[in-house]
Every structure is written in C-alpha cells, then in structure tokens.
Amino acid sequence: MPRHADPKARSALIASARAEFAKRGVKGARISDITAASGLSKGAFYLHFPSKESLFAALVQRFLEELERLATERISRMECFRADHGMPGPGDVATRSERYRAFLRLEAALDVEMLELMWEQRELVTALIVGSQGTAFESVMWDVVDREVDRIAREFHHLRGEQPDTPDVDPSLFGSFVVGTYLLLARRMGRLTQKPDLAAWAVGLQRLMHEGSLPREPVPPAVAYARPSSPPSTRRRHARAANPHRPPRKRP
Image (cartoon, rainbow, N blue to C red; front, side):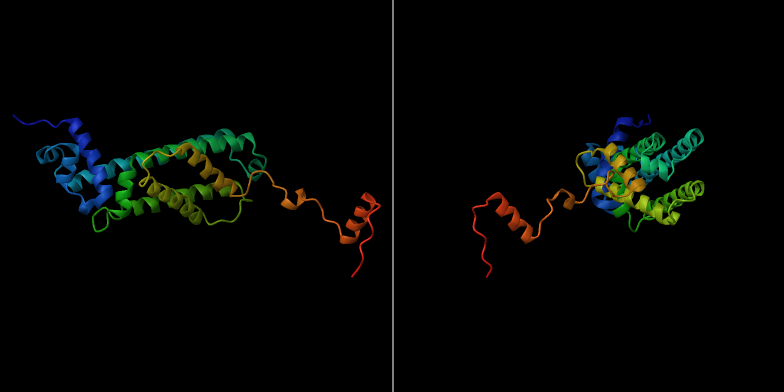
C-alpha cells in the first residue's frame, strides 16, 4: 500500500530547510541536518521532495508568486487612488494636505504588506542574497531587483509626467534607491531575532522618500535663543548704573 505524504511533515521539513539554507547556503545545507532538525527521517524527506534543490525551488517559486501578487495589487490600488483623488503635488506635500496624508497612508499600508512578506521569508531571502552562489538560483534575487527597479521607474516617470515641476531625478536612479533600501532592510531582517515595528518602518520610509530628511517644522537657529552680547563699554556703564558707589575701573 503506497505511503501518503503528511502535510504536517512537509511543513516541518520546510521550516527546518529554511533555517539550514539561511545558515549554510543552498550548497552547504544537508538533507540529514534538515530531517534531524524536523525530527523526521530521510525517507520522509524524499516522500515530499526529490532533492534539497527541488525543495528550495518550491520555496523560491512561492516567494516570486507572492511578490508578483503584491506588485499587481499595488499598481491597481494606486490607479484607483489617482482616479479618485488625483496625485498629490508639491503644494500638497508642503501643506501636508489631506490628499497627501491619504496618499502616505496608502503607500505605507502597501509597504507594510511587502515588509511582512520579507519578514516571513527572511531566511529564504538571506539564502538568495548570500547563499545561492554557484547554483541555479544565484541570479534569482538580482532578477527580482532589476524587475522592481524597472517597475518603480515606470511609476515614477508616470507620476512626474503628471507633475512637470517635480525635481529632475532619473527614474531608474529613484527605482534603484527604493529597491536598494528594501533589499538592505530584508538583509537586516535575516539577522534579527525579534520582529521589528514594520508599520513604523513603512511610515518612516515613505516620509523620507517624499519629504527628505529635513525636519517637518522649521527649527529657529540656536542663536535666536541666546541673549545678545553687549560691547565692553556698554557693560561697564550698566555696572556703574547698578552700583553707583563702585569706583571706576582704572585703565592699564
């Protein structure tokens, strides 16, 4: 009678494999370590996957599908926002209008979804970045990076076309800036043991991208709070007025 695959065993193998791939890379990971960590036998492994490479390929495929789903959803929701509200311009940013705040909330919510995926898949992303060299998967992450840079560049170009007074920034440079930032955050996630506040990350990143690093409110210079100094002669006159019985200071 054929042996049926246990879905719980498959999940346990996948969880153990992610950790091994992140720790040792695709080449260095061993099936014996994966099965030992999951408390299963090699026979159980081969019941679900013909090889460790096929397991890794299944993880990569699922990750790419999720990335594509989020990218498609982002484009759809941004188009709906444009149709309903129009895109915020420099005046909206300067006055922090309701349209601009709504735009920031939408962008941040979409970014949280992406960051949540990166957190969930942080071990796989780590393996793709630093543990896939010399395998069939070594270009996967960089293909994703190139595709996302192109997508963001097109979106940026479209936005700039609606707002001709937008500063002249190369769309590909902007796309590289955004994707590079998220790639480094994904790498950082692979080193964390506790989940960060992804919502705060998303809001901070959106403000940096749209407002730069300048403070929101103008800060008066420190000198404005200092008492203005008086010339020495004025200080001496004030001192004599306050103490008329004090003898005048002799000049050297």
